[in-house]
Amino acid sequence: MSELKVGIIFGGVFEEHPVSVKSAQEVAKNLDTDKYEAYWVGITKSGDWRLCDGPEASWEDGAHRPVVLSPDRSVHGLLVLDEGDDRGSYETIRLDVVLPVLHGKLGEDGAIQGLLELSGIPYVGCDVQSSALCMDKSLAYTVVGEAGIPTPNFWILGPGESVDPDVLPYPVFVKPARSGSSFGVSKVTSAAELDEAVATARQYDEKVLVEEGVVAEEIGCAILGNGAELVTGEVDHVALSHGFFKIHQEDAPETGSENATFIVPADIPAEAQELVKTEAQRVYRALGCRGLARVDMFLQADGTVVLNEVNTLPGLTSYSRYPRMMAAASISMTEFLDRAVTLALEETPR
Image (cartoon, rainbow, N blue to C red; front, side):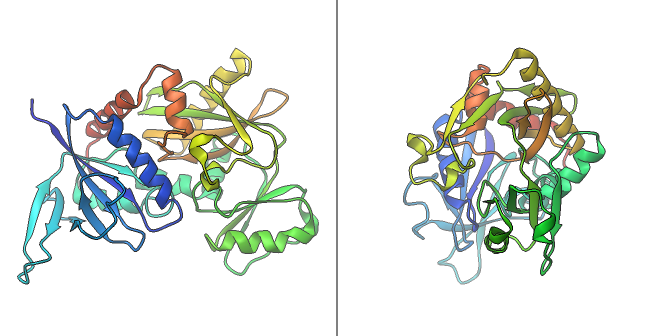
């Protein structure tokens, strides 16, 4: 049986670029090369697409050939450009499937998924609609709220809009509505801090979410699957000593977090673990997710859960939560990648 040709896209132009590169490095270590022939496409911080040998240290040095993903379905893959040929010649590489290892803007918000839909190439992860919904926290809250799943109380600030600071139930969290990880997030404990927090969030997105703080434990659930056939990893617990979870902004996350300890399986009762898994799957289905996602929730003292957020392309770094939860359920990174590709190939391109 011939190897499947898989295009692996990583990097990106926004704030999660370095996280994406670290995720791609873990994919490179764990992809089964007996089954898959990998074509690595790195997107530089300036937006150049480069065909490279992998996410090694030198991939962004400009020595690699320019490449684009063709939206022409007859190509079904990559156009590798010949910079030294003034006739504009190019080589085509047909792909069987694409694995986007991209986080945040233009990677997790439906943008790359839309390009892949045009190309007709099967791809790992959520489709355009569910990616866009999950990326916008206010839309995700609205949809799952209509499905009867609890969410925090929240206020939406569009461009130029403000909220009366005296009506807010402090503490609140001020967030970019459409950004990854904890970039631009502030905890606000008084009205005097609000304007600065909104300005910080607007550095990442003009649409801002002000969210009532939830007194609860932070719990996560890794999900893999399509439709009714869903597999969950072991539930995790992010135990915070202070502040809020923001490991991707820390200086040396590989050596551990400055304020968080990760407990997998979570140190919560068995019935609470099952409730988190059940509610996370409800969220996953309500938002139309497929392939994979990490659903983060708050577990309150009374045993009820509230949605925090959904990550449709969660980090796959050496310190990331999703692979850790899957590993605790005896699903290695290699097996996870194999299952994710298989799920993508089961989907019929539209």
